[in-house]
Amino acid sequence: VLATNGGRLISFSLTSHSIGYALAGNFRGQASVANGVVYIANNAQVEARKESDGSLQWSWAPPDGPSAGPMIVTKNLLLVSTAANTYAVDLASHAQVWTYPAGGQLALSAQGILFIAQSSGKLTAVAVR
Image 1 (spheres, rainbow, N blue to C red):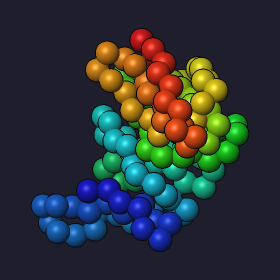
Image 2: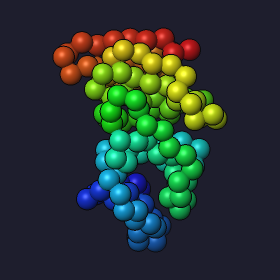
Image 3: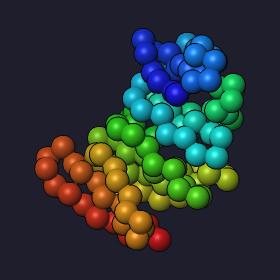
Image 4: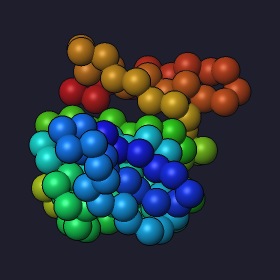
């Protein structure tokens, strides 16, 4: 189990009922996990960390401010939203590959439609396939 608390990223082992690691920082929000990598907001950047020990693999900073809400990981992209924009970051190159001018809470359908629920109440649907 992964959690953020008091700015720390904490990994709990359910088998040994102990803390696997606790990393200091300014971690916040919900971690997203895929293929042994944890994607988490730390300060104004998004970090990719090895799930087993928390070591930093790479990081990326949204150009318009910190991420807002949980991130979504696909086979090849990390989808990150800020208050104003949504970004796709390539998992292999760690580079931003596209931007959509709407930010908010993200959801991805099985058909490849990205839904962005903006704080204004507007819902945007974007085909990402």
